[in-house]
Image (cartoon, rainbow, N blue to C red; front, side, top):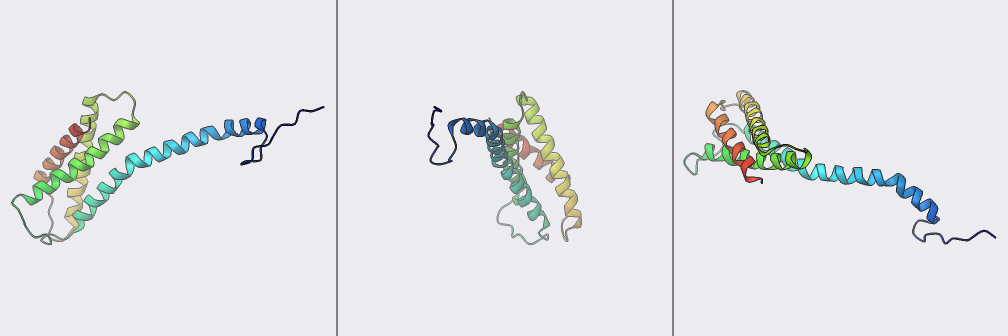
Length: 149
């Protein structure tokens, strides 16, 4: 006489069927966890980049000066935060990257994105690109890469 096995109340599957389903779905679960992890790591980077881009589209002279060196301070902290998130995302995604390579890669990212930001300002009324701003972007990127340890 065949042995009767109880079905799972939730799924309605027999134990052998459940094992087969688990074997099939396990890679998908791992991929979805990996995807969620990637989104958690890279979404802050993309949001910071979007905020910097938005701020660089604002017409020059719109911001009131409330402190000296306001522009320098904004550039430094905006790129520091961006690169803090960027270095965190890179560190958690790449295997075997040394701290020096991570810092170098992060600073290069800050300089490249800063250069595109300065170039973008050519097309915004009353805004001009500045090598000093690009230098400050690089310093902020360096600081952000150091803070994430």
